[in-house]
Amino acid sequence: MSGDYKFSRASKKCHVSDTPLAPGQTYYSVILELDEEFQRRDIAASHWDGPPEDAVGWWKNVVPMPVEAKRELAPPEVLLDLLRSMGQAPGSVKQRYLLALMLLRRRVLRVVESSSVETNAASPSETAGCETEFLKLVGPDGDVIRVEVVSITKSESEKLKTDLDALLYREEPTKGSGLFVSLEDEN
Image 1 (cartoon, one colour):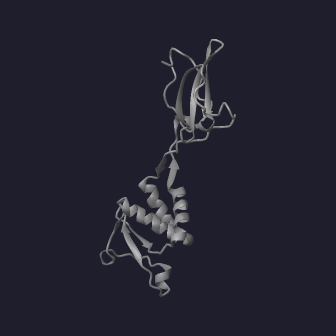
Image 2 (tube, one colour):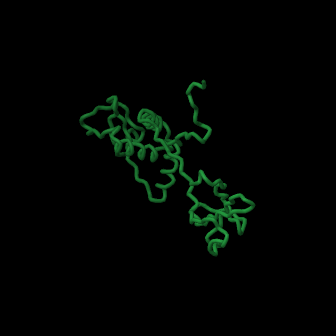
Image 3 (tube, rainbow, N blue to C red):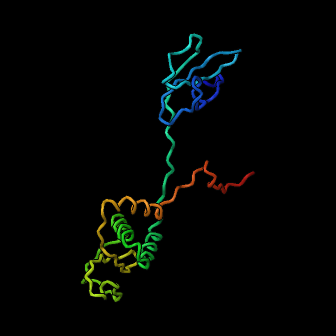
């Protein structure tokens, strides 16, 4: 029916108060015939007293919430490379442990018993006489990855999760983001 009658889209601000309509806010749209044209007016629910007498039509709306960008996890090969490289960085022990647990959960890695796999790389904590617990994990290519088991406090967990998410995820490009590239021929 909107093909028969032309009127503007939502204005994103209240006609009465001239203030922006916020995401999730309820408002009413009214169609009026003025000077032989149809005009749309959007009115915040807090300023709504009912439709004007000369309204052609009206309806209730809610301002949509912004769409969160979809996030894409890095491929397993990249995650494994990151896990290996984190072994060289002393400050990333807790992030490395969380990444290893995530890869276990996704079945990219699997735990092997200490007696079934020989490794010749001793960790500095083992050579210093300290006993440290390690997970021995086997990757898809059969290599053994040793990950130190660490405890993580509740106060640390949120920051570690945020930091790790920044490393592991990226936003998927969308057509409207400017990152989308079309490879179609223009004829």
